[in-house]
Length: 133
Image (tube, rainbow, N blue to C red):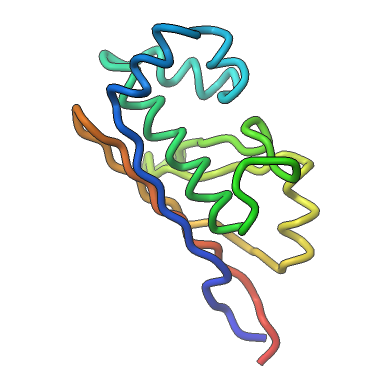
């Protein structure tokens, strides 16, 4: 077995668009896209919008790396953007709907990077796993 990159995804979100969505739909949008801990984290920040935009971008990037996107096989709440307790680095926790897919594809980890400014949030995801030599 050889460890390699099994998928990659990237996404860019305009902060103004996220701000408009949060203003218009607020809790309805948040509850549809973000789990409770994600909402608590973002809402605790001085500028929640940029943090929501970044987490939205992470979810898009990861599902693009999986090759599914958000849709019938993977929903918004099937993955959670978390932070490593020691380093603060972003990471992802998969829900039951994705865990089977991850196991079948021999995905052993996800590397996530995100960044945000006043205007944009960007995220990149790499799926790491094992393949036959």
